[in-house]
Every structure is written in C-alpha cells, then in structure tokens.
Length: 120
Image (cartoon, rainbow, N blue to C red; front, side, top):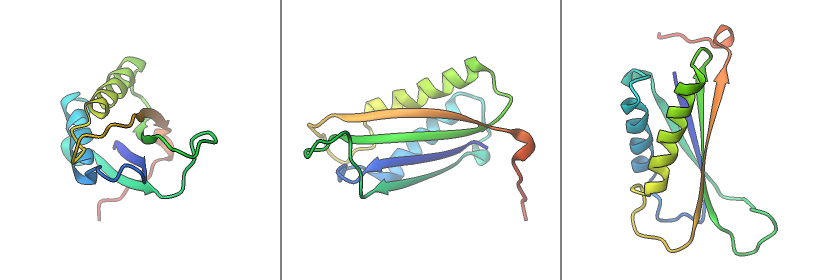
C-alpha cells in the first residue's frame, strides 16, 4: 500500500507513461510515509472522454491514491500536495505542449479491515 491509479486523456500524445509513474512514485517515496516496495502504480489512457460540451478538448491527468485507513489528515495533505506538485512540473512530457492540462489528485481512504493481501 499505497495503490496509485493514473488516468489521462488520449489527447496527451506526448505523455511518457513510464516517466509519469516514476515521478509520482518518487514523490511518494520522498514523503517518507511509504516503503518503496509497497507502492503499486498503474496508468490508463482514456480514449473516450468529454470535458463539458466542448469540441476542442482540454487535456487532463487524474491521480487516485488509495491509502489504508489510519493516516492523519496532515499526512494525506502532504501526499496530495506532493503529487500535485510533480504533475504541475510536467517532467513526464516528451515535448513541451501549448494547451493547458487539468491535473488533479484524489486521496482515498480504504478501510484497513477490508483490505486483503497475500504474498504467495
């Protein structure tokens, strides 16, 4: 734990998926709240999306970070701000883009008593 799921709009053709996962994992490690081997991240491209009713779509990246319950509000704030900060830097893009990118981070508590894991 934690589990991070990234979604991004298909119009971000210059996005380097592996680079994005690496910068968010690094940000999580730098908070000193997680063990390196516990961080599990994955990324999905949203081929079909619509922001409002516009024909010319803005781009977006949405991170969902699932944490086992028990973290303080301050810890969740630190993690959310760290992730948002690396998204804003755009170091995961292969080239500079002119259009705006909506970036957001959602920190979600998972009840510890309902998380089941096996290391077989």
